[in-house]
Length: 511
Image (cartoon, rainbow, N blue to C red; front, side, top):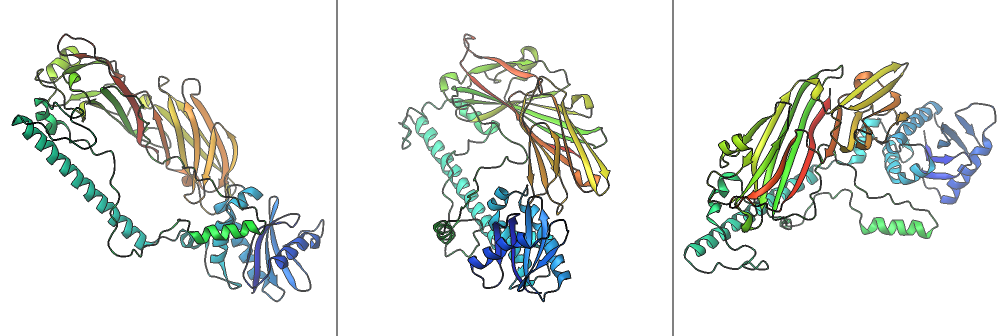
């Protein structure tokens, strides 16, 4: 066979995207596609039409046509097989078969078309190979990134070592009664007055990592690694030429997608000199037919003191948990005081908490297989209907005291069968054809919106839609453990503090 061109056009013959595999002018291909709708007979169903010079092999795609322009002496059976492969490639890159979606992913489609046909002749490839070739997985790029990450880690370790040396020099200077050396840009007042409490620093936490990451160290010599996805000057010049010819170029937005896995809430902008973090993460595994296989909640209260005036303090903890959580204090915290009065303070009240360091003072753990403790239940019901599968998935918030934000339910779907047909839905959805995942997005789940459902249909088997994974964030913790107030050791006067609470997902799967 000799394939002249492959195009996606409207029913009026307007070309949306076209790839020519032989030498052909733009005017020629536009003329061929404009004449195509006029050649089709009304009331008759065919897969091809012919003129004196070419043959059109086509397949309807809702409101569009997938058209192959071939020579008249080509093998019609091979043409039809090639047409089917072209028609399966388009849903891999476009969620809906509409003109705007095709235009937005036009370059992705052209790259895929080039993998199917070369110089007018069909290549022996399938859909999985096309996906692999277009992703251009580069071993050299992986090696380059691994080397760069190693160099960044070594640079960070060197920075921490230098910081320890400077801190030790400062301590030695203060013990000798000399003025501590200044640190450029910070001055002596911002880091002065290191109290004897710094003796417990190493036993509680490591020194804080520097907030400003160093510039990555480039390897010596020219790098031969491929830099995939970068827009060079050649691409910009090519786009400018297309615009000068009157083409309407659609540049896809560069917004970031929601991250997979656990998310972390942004810390508050204004923090006091005494700042508390109450952090919890959940690890949960359920069966698709019901039953909680494992649920584990890990929590911690972290204290950060940035003013030596507030170093000698105590935290008043309210433990209203009734789920059977296990508590554990840090070895340097007075355990008897916490057991008797729910107060967190150092064993030696004359010492202060270390400055400018995150100190984990209390942690807790809850492990259970009790289904009533599941915060958010997910039920997925796939049922076969001929060659398709109708899937109904629903959620219910069991703990109505929680407010879950940015909830994403990830449902795997079969590849190479197009986008799912969505029925009823609460919230929004996204179909990632490259990862073969349907993302069900819900901004908020609370007591006013504690249940919802999603229905869709797609070709596949019931096992294709598992495991289902869930991610969310919350500003309310699961175990009801709170810090009521912070007071000074001397005088029991209240200290001003800020608090930050987060409940995130480490793993949440329905197998």
